Image (cartoon, rainbow, N blue to C red):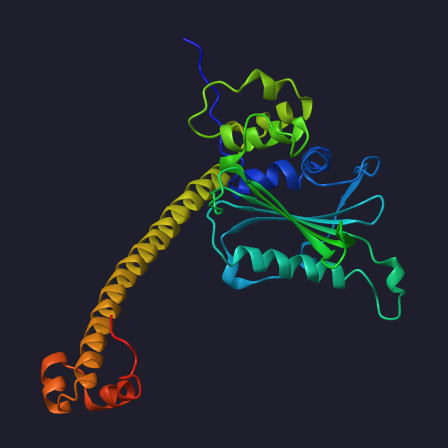
Length: 300
């Protein structure tokens, strides 16, 4: 019986960094297929930039991969992989990308030297309610112009990996194959799709996900990472459930309060003594005094 290769999920940090943080030719293929680059202005050569240029934000430890690089034209690219969606991930990527923009120039340099910066956020969970929208491209535009005129200095792209269709015109076919690789390869994989293996760069990336390529320490880190993700998901889901329950309770309390106010308004309109209204509705005198000015409003 043939023995299957054991694969690790490329969306985990230690795997993602081994693929895209150590192999610029794989990152180049990945970015050219996913980013909204003009025809003829694709990335030809990539150089990794020092990690200290990436802002350190302690509150965002669950962003699992930071890759910062520049190309032959001086454009900057920051790539992050987020397995668990949190609303603060958007402002984080805005912050990091804007920092990379501002750090391009030294004191006294001409602003004409400024080059575009692309922030790419790869999301392992869905976060947008529109099931047809999974590729989100934000840029600076003049909303008073029709069609809009854009400034090419700042781009944010968020990709919801779970919602990526098998075929789309939104990005190049190679981009779809790369995202399928990100979604389909994991610990449960027995066979990798021939479509993926037909692309040399993706076939190489698949090889880099094989567990045999990792040290015992890296494998322990991989396991502990997913344990932390499970805990984080539990906390997020628990918080959402509590919020929903609290919202429901608040809604019931608000409805009860409005009903009491409606009764009080009706009694005020009939000049019923405040003491009787307080006893019946449970509202205090200050609340009734606030309603007093509304007693001429028609009560339905």
